Length: 188
Ligand SMILES: *[C@@H]1O[C@H](CO)[C@@H](O)[C@H](O)[C@H]1NC(C)=O
Ligand SMILES: *[C@@H]1O[C@H](CO)[C@@H](O)[C@H](O)[C@H]1NC(C)=O
Ligand SMILES: *[C@@H]1O[C@H](CO)[C@@H](O)[C@H](O)[C@H]1NC(C)=O
Ligand SMILES: *[C@@H]1O[C@H](CO)[C@@H](O)[C@H](O)[C@H]1NC(C)=O
Ligand SMILES: *[C@@H]1O[C@H](CO)[C@@H](O)[C@H](O)[C@H]1NC(C)=O
Image (cartoon, rainbow, N blue to C red; front, side, top):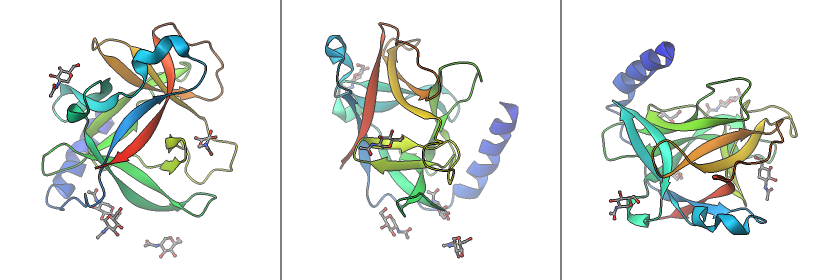
């Protein structure tokens, strides 16, 4: 945790002057996966950053599109098996520096992890396919060895639906307050 804080501070210093390439921005919208008819309240929500400290946010979802934060992709030089590069999922929250989507590995034995939107240029390993935003914990690893198990949204500690990331190697039933979703980019 402390190491990451130090990293943020260093990252902020080096990126504050770089202008953000926000030429193709999108908002991320939840799409309820099939077979969850009782979870309609988690469908069509918009990704929002909920402030938890200086430069720190939890990823939550609101019903109103106007609150949805604007994201953009910053390609990294690692190519997935389909020939497309992975990217860092960055956000323009209105300041001089970007924020990045980051899966917080808070507990190796937990089946899902909270997702942060913290100041910095981030953790890579993101890509899009027809199911929306995906993540690869180890970019470049063999197809089929990805430990990302999809996005989970839960009524949680902010009083609004909150985003989590599942590990693929657990097969637990979701709590009744959670639903499996895709995150679909909607270009602005
Ligand atoms: C995007 O990536 C490029 C190349 O890695 C880097 O120079 C640039 O600072 C990044 N932009 C942002 C906004 O992080
Ligand atoms: C800015 O982003 C767009 C869309 O992602 C990309 O096509 C373009 O090459 C980028 N420009 C720079 C200078 O990185
Ligand atoms: C959007 O919804 C959130 C919570 O549901 C609320 O706090 C916020 O004020 C709303 N924003 C707008 C612009 O209506
Ligand atoms: C990407 O990586 C390859 C292999 O390491 C290298 O040859 C190439 O120059 C890199 N491209 C950029 C834009 O950094
Ligand atoms: C998109 O990628 C994920 C891996 O994160 C995979 O499980 C899913 O099947 C892919 N969707 C499609 C439509 O290819």
